[in-house]
Image 1: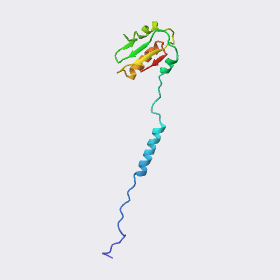
Image 2 (image 1 turned 90 degrees about the horizontal axis):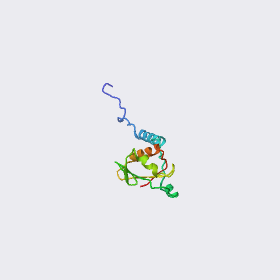
Image 3 (image 1 turned 180 degrees about the vertical axis):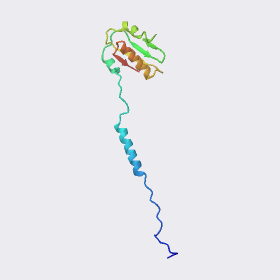
Image 4 (image 1 turned 90 degrees about the vertical axis):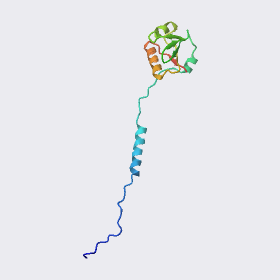
Length: 131
Protein backbone atom coordinates (compact mmCIF):
# COMPACT_ATOMS: atom_id res chain seq x y z
CA UNK A 1 0.00 0.00 0.00
CA UNK A 2 2.86 2.30 0.37
CA UNK A 3 3.33 2.86 -3.36
CA UNK A 4 -0.28 2.41 -4.31
CA UNK A 5 -2.42 5.43 -5.00
CA UNK A 6 -6.10 5.63 -5.26
CA UNK A 7 -7.46 5.62 -8.81
CA UNK A 8 -10.57 7.76 -9.11
CA UNK A 9 -10.79 7.40 -12.88
CA UNK A 10 -10.06 10.04 -15.49
CA UNK A 11 -9.74 13.55 -14.17
CA UNK A 12 -12.82 15.68 -14.85
CA UNK A 13 -12.52 19.29 -15.94
CA UNK A 14 -14.66 21.72 -13.97
CA UNK A 15 -17.85 22.55 -15.83
CA UNK A 16 -18.06 26.14 -17.07
CA UNK A 17 -21.18 28.10 -16.33
CA UNK A 18 -23.07 29.19 -19.46
CA UNK A 19 -23.66 32.94 -19.77
CA UNK A 20 -26.36 32.58 -22.43
CA UNK A 21 -29.38 32.47 -20.03
CA UNK A 22 -28.09 35.50 -18.14
CA UNK A 23 -27.61 37.50 -21.36
CA UNK A 24 -31.13 36.52 -22.47
CA UNK A 25 -32.58 37.80 -19.19
CA UNK A 26 -30.67 41.07 -19.43
CA UNK A 27 -31.89 41.69 -22.98
CA UNK A 28 -35.48 40.86 -22.03
CA UNK A 29 -35.31 43.33 -19.14
CA UNK A 30 -33.82 45.96 -21.42
CA UNK A 31 -36.61 45.52 -23.97
CA UNK A 32 -39.25 45.56 -21.22
CA UNK A 33 -38.04 48.85 -19.76
CA UNK A 34 -37.60 50.44 -23.20
CA UNK A 35 -41.18 49.61 -24.15
CA UNK A 36 -42.74 50.52 -20.82
CA UNK A 37 -41.03 53.83 -20.16
CA UNK A 38 -41.85 57.27 -21.48
CA UNK A 39 -38.89 58.98 -23.02
CA UNK A 40 -40.23 62.50 -22.63
CA UNK A 41 -43.32 64.57 -22.40
CA UNK A 42 -45.17 64.98 -25.66
CA UNK A 43 -45.43 68.63 -26.58
CA UNK A 44 -47.90 69.99 -29.09
CA UNK A 45 -47.92 73.32 -30.84
CA UNK A 46 -51.44 74.60 -31.51
CA UNK A 47 -51.13 75.77 -35.12
CA UNK A 48 -53.42 75.46 -38.08
CA UNK A 49 -52.35 73.59 -41.16
CA UNK A 50 -52.98 74.66 -44.72
CA UNK A 51 -56.42 73.03 -44.72
CA UNK A 52 -57.86 75.39 -42.11
CA UNK A 53 -56.64 78.45 -43.95
CA UNK A 54 -58.10 77.17 -47.23
CA UNK A 55 -61.43 76.30 -45.62
CA UNK A 56 -62.30 79.89 -44.77
CA UNK A 57 -62.40 82.93 -46.94
CA UNK A 58 -59.45 85.24 -46.35
CA UNK A 59 -60.36 88.61 -44.92
CA UNK A 60 -58.37 91.80 -44.88
CA UNK A 61 -54.86 92.58 -46.01
CA UNK A 62 -52.25 89.85 -46.43
CA UNK A 63 -50.45 88.87 -43.24
CA UNK A 64 -47.45 86.76 -44.25
CA UNK A 65 -44.47 86.57 -41.94
CA UNK A 66 -41.30 85.14 -43.48
CA UNK A 67 -39.01 83.81 -40.77
CA UNK A 68 -35.30 83.82 -41.59
CA UNK A 69 -32.39 83.22 -39.22
CA UNK A 70 -31.63 86.95 -39.02
CA UNK A 71 -34.76 88.96 -39.74
CA UNK A 72 -38.54 88.75 -39.83
CA UNK A 73 -40.31 90.01 -42.94
CA UNK A 74 -43.95 91.05 -42.82
CA UNK A 75 -45.36 90.93 -46.35
CA UNK A 76 -41.82 91.20 -47.75
CA UNK A 77 -40.75 94.16 -45.61
CA UNK A 78 -38.09 93.60 -42.96
CA UNK A 79 -39.62 94.17 -39.54
CA UNK A 80 -37.95 94.09 -36.15
CA UNK A 81 -39.14 91.52 -33.66
CA UNK A 82 -40.23 94.21 -31.21
CA UNK A 83 -42.21 96.06 -33.89
CA UNK A 84 -43.90 92.97 -35.34
CA UNK A 85 -47.09 93.12 -33.24
CA UNK A 86 -47.50 96.84 -33.85
CA UNK A 87 -47.00 96.37 -37.60
CA UNK A 88 -49.60 93.58 -37.68
CA UNK A 89 -52.22 95.65 -35.84
CA UNK A 90 -53.50 97.69 -38.81
CA UNK A 91 -53.56 94.58 -41.03
CA UNK A 92 -55.85 92.58 -38.71
CA UNK A 93 -59.56 92.89 -39.58
CA UNK A 94 -60.52 91.09 -36.34
CA UNK A 95 -58.82 89.67 -33.29
CA UNK A 96 -59.11 86.08 -34.51
CA UNK A 97 -57.83 86.76 -38.04
CA UNK A 98 -55.19 84.32 -39.29
CA UNK A 99 -51.52 85.13 -39.70
CA UNK A 100 -49.45 82.98 -42.06
CA UNK A 101 -45.96 81.92 -40.96
CA UNK A 102 -43.42 80.76 -43.54
CA UNK A 103 -40.02 79.59 -42.29
CA UNK A 104 -37.29 80.23 -44.88
CA UNK A 105 -34.01 78.40 -45.51
CA UNK A 106 -31.78 78.36 -42.45
CA UNK A 107 -34.47 79.17 -39.88
CA UNK A 108 -34.52 76.46 -37.25
CA UNK A 109 -37.45 75.19 -35.23
CA UNK A 110 -36.50 77.19 -32.13
CA UNK A 111 -36.63 80.41 -34.15
CA UNK A 112 -40.14 79.50 -35.38
CA UNK A 113 -41.32 78.69 -31.85
CA UNK A 114 -39.90 81.98 -30.53
CA UNK A 115 -41.83 83.96 -33.16
CA UNK A 116 -45.00 81.99 -32.40
CA UNK A 117 -44.61 82.68 -28.67
CA UNK A 118 -44.09 86.39 -29.36
CA UNK A 119 -47.25 86.51 -31.52
CA UNK A 120 -49.33 84.68 -28.92
CA UNK A 121 -48.08 87.03 -26.21
CA UNK A 122 -49.25 89.90 -28.41
CA UNK A 123 -52.77 88.44 -28.65
CA UNK A 124 -52.49 86.77 -32.07
CA UNK A 125 -53.47 83.12 -31.69
CA UNK A 126 -54.68 82.02 -35.12
CA UNK A 127 -51.44 80.99 -36.81
CA UNK A 128 -51.12 79.07 -40.06
CA UNK A 129 -47.81 77.39 -40.83
CA UNK A 130 -46.85 76.82 -44.48
CA UNK A 131 -43.73 75.64 -46.24
